[in-house]
Length: 521
Image (tube, helix red, strand yellow):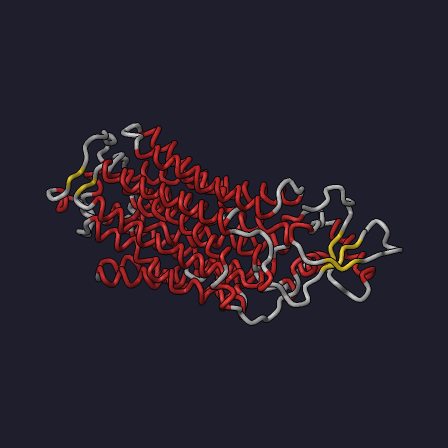
């Protein structure tokens, strides 16, 4: 733990021949009155909008499929629970006029097919982003998915296998997004700003869900472009517009940015070092215990998130009997809570670390454990909420929303242990954590096919809760909070300079420790 009585003006410098030459830049950095419009925060904001699009493109089918499927032909063979009263406008009748005769298992395959492609580009995406930069990879990945989303109505009416293949290819395009963004943060985010920058950017995923679910519901119930097809036309178009802005305004590194201030560029490069073309140490990565701890937490979190993301509209329709508009609106409420807690947890974690209330390791442990064990408790409670609609929505909101604490846990831990290889590490853990994307809907489909009852859904909530607990325990046992030896640059040292006396500077070379580095304010 660093000394909390250190001088407030301490600044961080890398080893230059004449450290005193850097003092004017440090002073300029202190004059930044609006850090929220700095280049690194603008990058995080544009990434936020990018992930809004990513999840709008991913989630829209979860709502649209409720209107696409014709349930009339399936009703005779299904055991559908009538234990809960439905809405006055009878949601079952409205959905029975869909075009497609897909049973629950088929719907599970369609919803999960995206992730078969998504898993294939996780590791390649992270590795490529470290080599060529994440800007183009992130942008082109979303462009691919946006164009294919525009084609979804045509392909769905043409062929069921064709729709499954299209969703797989969409997953291939989106698979590079998170690893490439992690690689960009590896060269853009100062040590003690990692949690808040990452939480701002990645919370776009939850905001995309909040936006996509209700808008998709209203579009499906409208006459625009035939109802449900308009969902894919609207979000596909918005995705293409964002890609154009991203490619015009964003740059791979601080050194390539034409509008970044000298002070900000120096601050970033002195905090994390300049981008280096290092050989990827695959053996060290694959035998890294903390990495597999992160993977366990990542898998558990994604199981809960993806299962609710793809299956919550179905649960609210078939069990709680909400109509399509109320269904889509209420399905978004848990993700609004998740978005709020993700952003807050990132800022809170950096505040705790900056003020040395806890070191990085314990901060990650506390936030990750909270983000897995609290949802586990509420998930069991949901299983016994019965037909109380208000209680069910409240419990689901807490079950999904409190998962946001893990944003300051496993989600940014890759940047702590190996910032230069964060893209590759995230690709590995997100690849493993993609498995729930296709496995969870399949499990729901198997459990509820011809047995759409609360008892069958209860089994799924038990499974989800157990996975949360196991993931939390493994993460606690294996995680680390400091940069690992194999991930460090051979000459990585820092110089701590007392800025209060720039005329008589006494510099001392110290071993690198991310928990003992003061941040420029």
